[in-house]
Image (cartoon, rainbow, N blue to C red; front, side, top):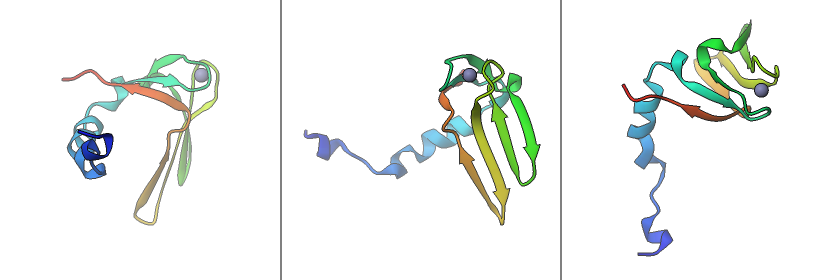
Length: 89
Ligand SMILES: [Zn+2]
């Protein structure tokens, strides 16, 4: 089977993403893309400036995430997070 024959579209991961993002987020462990520090989400530094929220690494203060909510939509920028790790419950 070729690579192209094995390729699916994004609908194939809908269930997987729903499982992951329904998990308890505050105990998920995020790795900072800037300094590599690993911190539980509950320990990061959060600055709320409506309508946006900025999340910073407690080790190096680089931006991990930006979340903006408005007009019935959310925009999530996770450029500063290299990985998120969850424990299956
Ligand atoms: Zn960092």
